[in-house]
Length: 410
Ligand code: GAL
Image 1 (cartoon, rainbow, N blue to C red):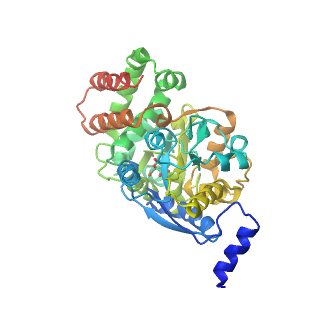
Image 2 (image 1 turned 180 degrees about the vertical axis):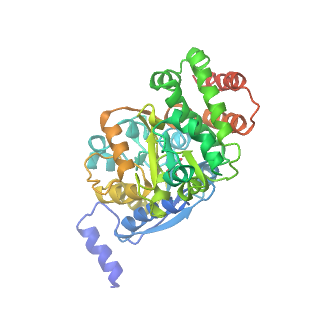
Image 3 (image 1 turned 30 degrees about the horizontal axis):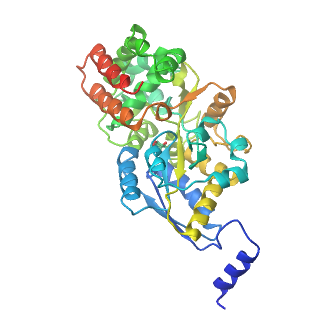
């Protein structure tokens, strides 16, 4: 009997919860930057160590490009073994259509409800009491990343908050620096707006609009101030011509730009460039104004494949992704926070430690992906890139259009 078959028979005879191994799973995601690729390689390594095989299905162009590809493959009968989506409602229709694997048995056997923090992450995976995804990280968008080199070149101190950053723009420009680097994709403009809402509008206003869906607050004078601050910020990014978020991050890494508003996945790029938090770059969560993080991030879903061997391997992959070892190895490289509090992140750098402290303080709110439907998010993103790229759209006009979009989902 061939060795592999013997191994399979032996494994089966001890009733392992998993397949005998040697199952190939294609895993799709949109992690194609240097930092993202280094991080996802840790998941691949951990899954390969089980005797199965991770077949990498990276899709370039970011989430807005990748998700339609993922969805059409699943609904079109060409499903992958596992796929990334953000925490929230992006896979809800696929789950409701009965196309996604129920992971509740693994989740209950491994006590995911007691492991995963904040609980909202597992809630986002739960439909009608059943669990359909494994949360793998916490990413918060509301960070300002500053180039210590750009400020040294400009001969001024590194800002400690958003207002100081805005005030530093003339000196940066005089030194030939781009004040604010911003990529030319809708989600990036929306991310920047959300971060400024936190910084200028404050936590209570953010919650009123994004949690209570209070449309009076959305249309009110406080939010108008946010749109006015965003109009000032778009001036600082006027000469930013890059497309992808990590190209903008690279401008901060090299000192070509003073700063970038971006999620903490930017850390992965600094790490690959061997830049040291606190020495080469400075991170300001909540733009240095309101230190809170929204618990966005990523989860993996598993399309039904109608193959017991593959299904066992899919469940094993979900278990591996949540394991302590994989959580530490992946998140340290991804720049995100782990979804379990019982891991030792001794190697966390100063910025990750700031995020962990805020997470521990409970100063967290759900992400936009967890509050608004994908359709609403897409409409808001389209408005935001129009607003950020056209220097002449009036803040009040943008606010009025924004409120109309939100009303349809509130
Ligand atoms: C987000 C995702 C992050 C990061 C970012 C940029 O949607 O949650 O993991 O990769 O996109 O690609």
